[in-house]
Length: 147
Image 1 (cartoon, one colour):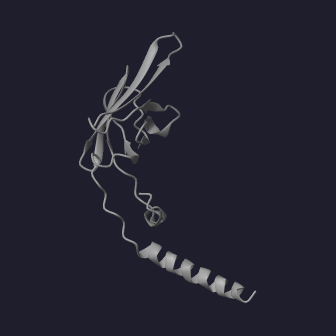
Image 2 (cartoon, one colour):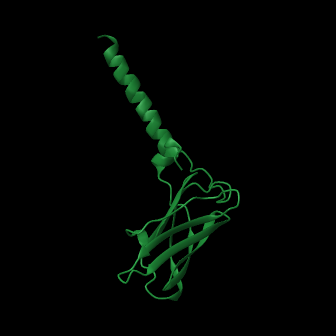
Image 3 (cartoon, rainbow, N blue to C red):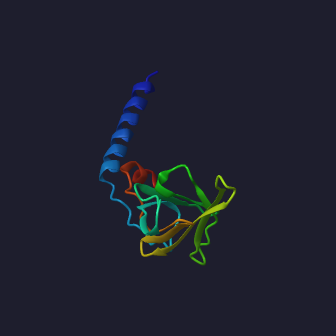
C-alpha cells in the first residue's frame, strides 16, 4: 500500500518525460526511395492521354517486402503486385471484365527517383503519370519509430 502513491508519481514522471520528448523529437531524415521503398506513398495522377482517368483525388501505394498495392484515387479498386527491390521494379495490376465480358486490365508501374516514386497508370481508355511521396509523418509515429 505504501508504494502505491510512489508508483503513481513514477508513472506521472515517465509520462511527462515521454510527452516532452515526443514534442521535441526531430523528424528522422527521409531516406531515398531506392534504399527504403517500404511504407506508404501518396500522390495525384495526372492524365497523359485518354479519358476517365482517376485524377480527382489522392492515389495511394503501399510497399511491403513481399507485396504491394496501388489504389487509384483511393477508390475501391486495388491493384496488387510483388515488389522487386533489387531490380527496382514495382508493378501492380488488376484485371476485370466489363459488361460485355471484355477484359479490362489496369496496370501500374513505378520506379524510385530520389526520395519519390515516379509511376505510370494505364487502362484501355486512360494513361496517367504520378509522383508519389511519403505522407507527412505525425509526431507519434516519430516517437514510436514507425516512419
